[in-house]
Length: 167
Image 1: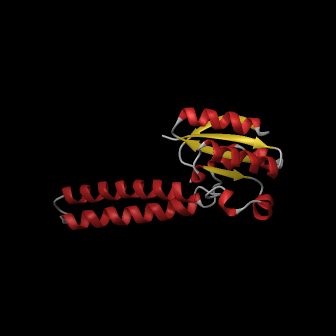
Image 2: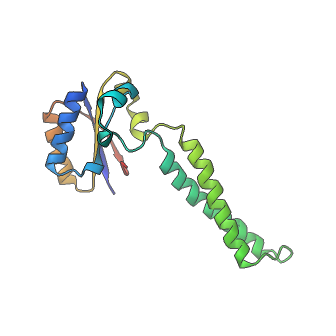
Image 3: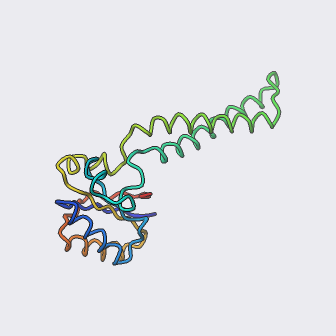
């Protein structure tokens, strides 16, 4: 499981310098990103430095896909077990598929309006004009070395640690 670390930089220049330090320390480019207010991201950040998705769209869609598929499977198996209904095994698979599609679609719609985890947790930092440097990796020693270097580049480490994927 990847561990996520978040740092607050006072401006875009400091944040970009810290991001480049993290990359130099060995953090993979797709495991490092900058997060800021929309106007900062649109006008001052290169696309390859931005967080992958500003919303919870994909994680929500995956949760909905799995949850809907499980519910569809259970409903199909229950219907198959009732002799009066008598649906075949193919119908169980169809129930599972329809459940997964409906669950994924509904959850994705809901997730598209929910800010990403980093944006929710550090809303006050972002609204204050700070730029966040976000890194994640599985190697704790690499994270510690990179964290020390990022802090030395002029950022402040925010002590909330998240487990999960950045992109």
